Amino acid sequence: YGWVTVNYLMKAMQSAKQKTYGTIDLGGGSVQIVFEPKSGASLPAPYLATVPLPGGEKRVYVRSHLGYGLDEARRSIAAVVAKSGKMVHPCLPSGYIGPVVTTGGGAVEMKGSGNYAACVQLIESIFPKAECPLAPCSIQGSYQPELNGEFIGFSYMYDRTKQIGLLDDDPQVYGEQKMDIAQIKQG
Image (cartoon, rainbow, N blue to C red; front, side):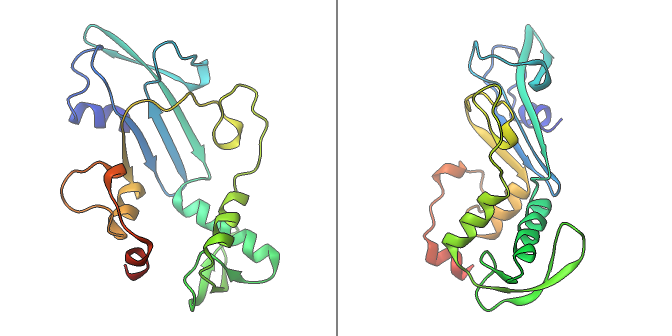
């Protein structure tokens, strides 16, 4: 429904011939991606939604990745740290000491180290290598055609980019936003 809403508001659904916007909805428990693939791209049944429009229809790729929303991903990452027994979380700011919720729902006290390289490795660890029966694939080996067109992100996508200063109150193209790492650390 988010894809329909976005494209309706952007006036991109008045005819089947119009270019549409892809959407990325980063929720707490899952992330959804919906977009119109390039003409001729294969869309197997589990990844296909057909949207009727004046003068035809749109075939869109749809996929929800349960467990990869912002809150669930954070919990999964914290669970990996807790399982290691070290209780030093590289993705938390250096100097932070406090409770962090894991996938079990309980809070564990952790210390932040602010180690970017270790944080990237940790994040990558929650995206296990999966068999890719139909390429190209995205998270968990699920099929995803090549990205096509412009995308609009919402829910936590908006909240997080706004919080670190990548967006102001004017509509903008996310890819055009620039900020150096020193500015992010100050935010």
